[in-house]
Length: 142
Image (tube, rainbow, N blue to C red):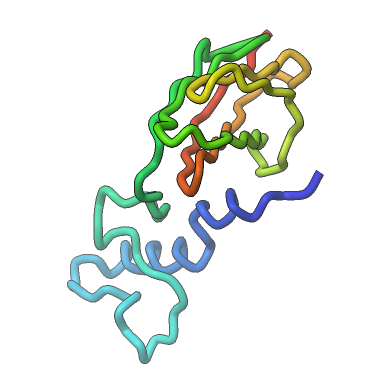
């Protein structure tokens, strides 16, 4: 299995961690190391926005719900799909590897995923409908 780069691009990178750590050490000085070109640092501090996780938000995400969660067998996924696009589902384990789980589209707004063959653990379910996508965590527990 290969690591999907879409998940990696949503993950904070080491350059941001280093700049944030440095910013934490000099926070009382009012200096933001990410805005000091002479320091030649790559990345930006998460301390600029204390509510930031370093992960960019995807605009116009479709709403979707996973039920039941935690799950051990068939999972129902309900989502917005006003234009009746074909939904695409990808499931990733905690280290970003894409895993296979069969799914069936039941209607323009619902699909089922069979997670019975997945090992116990936490997975990320990514659904793409048209040009929009959203990810949610799914716990598989048998």
